[in-house]
Length: 126
Image 1: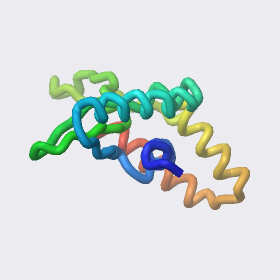
Image 2: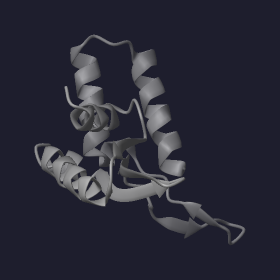
Image 3: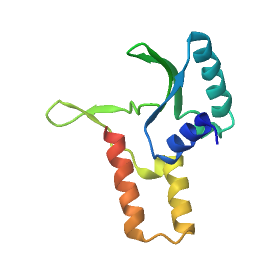
């Protein structure tokens, strides 16, 4: 498995929230960026929309950053006039529904399923 495939696979599975692929120089960075896009395009349309690719540098080292798009969500005003995230229903997320369906098929306990739903809701608030 290539580094690029591994980063995308770990993003999709939720093991990581972002990954960085090292690049030798600007031309290599552009080449790696194209390879990441090509690998990303092999995913389903739902998963493709979750992943973002960008050029990145830190301390003079060039990278391609691959990460899940932030969930900007919808904000509403609470009773005190403060902006707070609108709580989404888990049934509104095709990604979560797919995960829950697979967990049920795998015979996971309701406790494990509830924990995944709780983690998903926590991520929605971030």
